[in-house]
Length: 231
Image 1 (cartoon, one colour):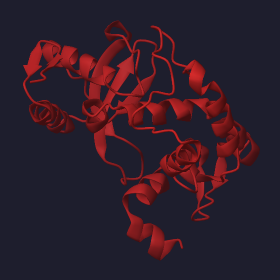
Image 2 (spheres, rainbow, N blue to C red; image 1 turned 180 degrees about the vertical axis):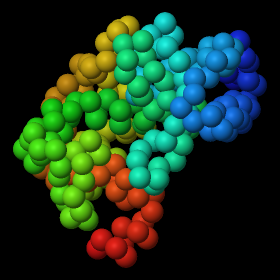
Image 3 (cartoon, rainbow, N blue to C red; image 1 turned 90 degrees about the vertical axis):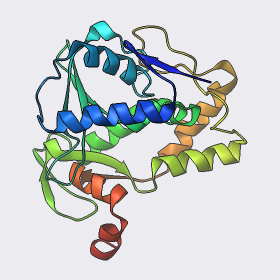
């Protein structure tokens, strides 16, 4: 039977790992924004976040502390765990993404990084240096600090359509190489280099939209809000 070793803890089942992680989050929610001081929990969370596809090469020594906070703004967001790195940057992560760290999610994460320049270009083109922007979903004006560049067709759907056309089983094959320590930009596997270049072109024809972080959260978590208020 597979066991899970994280920090100084050993879990015999994935369910036990999940329950333990959720209990940490539950307790941290009672002290939003405060550092988690328990060293055993800190070591556990260091190993937990390494399982997240968005942070494949994070090192324990890079992490200063963990805490719980809202994952967004305007009260429309859930509370999740965050970690602060010693370089001053702060990053949120979901427990579920750490526990279910599968090939599909790793591929999604790497493909997002391959099209980062397209996202940045759209942001510059539509927002530029302005301090406010008008949401392309609700036409409400927001402060630019609340900006989120989203896909009109969900990114996961774009990826699935592309991979279906290419005959790639995204749930079974890794498109990118295992990254060396300290390397965050994905490197395509030799056999998928051309496919990833085609994906960049395929992605470029799908429309993006500038919306607020709160709208992004509600769009992806509250379909009724999207349908009735903003058809």
